[in-house]
Amino acid sequence: MKWFALSIVFLVAVQHGISLKEGEGCVIRHTDSSGLCIRGSKCMTALNDYQRNGIPPTLCSEYRFPFLVCCTGVTLEDIIPVLDTRRVSERKCDEYKQIPQTKRTVTAQACDYDELDVAGELATQWEFPHVVALGWGNKVDSNSFQSAGSLISSRFVLTRAYFSKLINAAPTIVRFGGLEIDVPSSKENTGSIDVQTQAIYFHPEYSFPMRYNDIALVEMKADVDFGIIRPACLWSNPDFPEYSKPIITSWPAVDPSYSERRLLKKTPRRLLDSDTCNETLKDYFDFYWKGVADEQLCTGHVREGSSCERVNGSPLQLVSYEYTNQCIFHVLGVMVSDCSMFTRVSSHLDWIEKVVWPGE
Image (cartoon, rainbow, N blue to C red):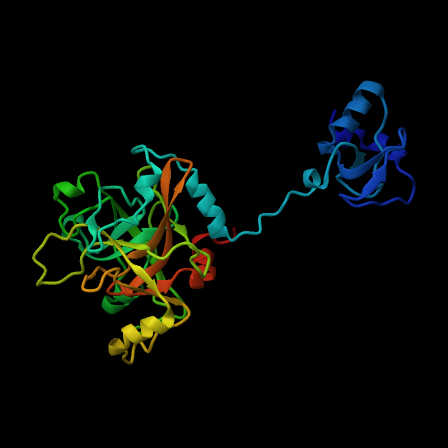
């Protein structure tokens, strides 16, 4: 029988004028045992007592609907669910960790990039399933891929704002699984996936051509299915305990003098504090950039003399191994300048979450 149908009967079990709230203590009249006020639909002992023995439950209030009954064998956790107070991006990261690994068995060693060659190494296809190339153009075969980005949800890619502002045009294509940029027919791009874009959102505090708050979100026309494509997590902590050597994943920057093939590479970087960064990069100070701000990250070469010139928007990331048999990538920053300067993701999470997961 439904609680609604029984409610009139149950009213006789309420002491006149008594009004208790959900979760408050109470006493069951026919046993004098202590209980907690809970919604009738959740108290099976009270329902069983009535159905089997004809004993009406003790109601906690004669005015409240749905009716609250005095119930034994329950705790506050049963009544009031524990609220998840984490950021939505942190909750999404937990969801991403449950996405099945579809390509290969991953070991903890496969997620350890500490021994990566300081000059960088070529990546394998889908090794970084969140990294994308952003293209501008009307036809897939003639797109000019000038930026990189990171998939952070089924619909959105995180990248830099500068280039789209420079040419006054949003990217038209998001390419997943591409190893050689600008060469669609390359055998290294076999199996790559192109998705059309719908819109681009610039951080409200970004002012072109300044290098502060240089971050943007590209919205695709359709959600992508997760499998070989997987989103990255967003690093929400302003600090990086136990981490000192993140990696950057991207293609060589567009340069007419660059004669080698532009293949996806993974390169280790060394995190620098603001003072060291400002001293190292002081020769680059100009009207558009006057030093490291709190919303920025700075990295240096792992070994002096090595070089790193990559397309803008490339992710700076940390990698962890999860028991779900996959590497989890945590994006720390979005590249602004030559592998050295990054927009700090944690400083812009309020805006990112509002655009990507509104209302969650």
